[in-house]
Image (spheres, rainbow, N blue to C red):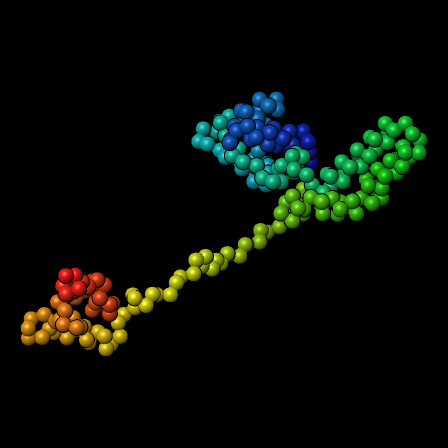
Length: 230
């Protein structure tokens, strides 16, 4: 079977990810211009990459793919083109950097140690290096190690609903606003005497607070007695 990944799909995916950094969507024409491939080849590649790597959408153009577009790419696409790291890629890159440093080292002893370290990381202890790289990368992805290319993505865990207590405790109802007792309500409801109006205690002629029947208190301040003001 003919391999299309390296020659067609990966260059198209790489260009798509790069172009989406500059625009909210990219057309087949944009990708074709960037890769040097013709529009039909780009459209075929995008169809193969959809939906695992890209969200490819076709408009009603009578089969003309020039204005078909990619709306977004997936995390798998970003890892495939190297924009997002994987544990495997990080381990391989570390081995390559150690080997390159060994080739540039002029001290024979240090050169041997660096070459040995590169061989350990890239071959002998590669599995352990990949596990260590996954632990290093996991905090950057919310504590969940990212799967390698082709592995299933773990299902997201639903976050429990937050419960908040009342931030301001409600005060007790003041005594002044409480409903009067049954005896007070009955007293307030008694009709005035035959003289016409109910006199306040002590025989004075001051007005009675109309709200007294509701609160049990006379909130109108008594007028001074004429005998004391003279």
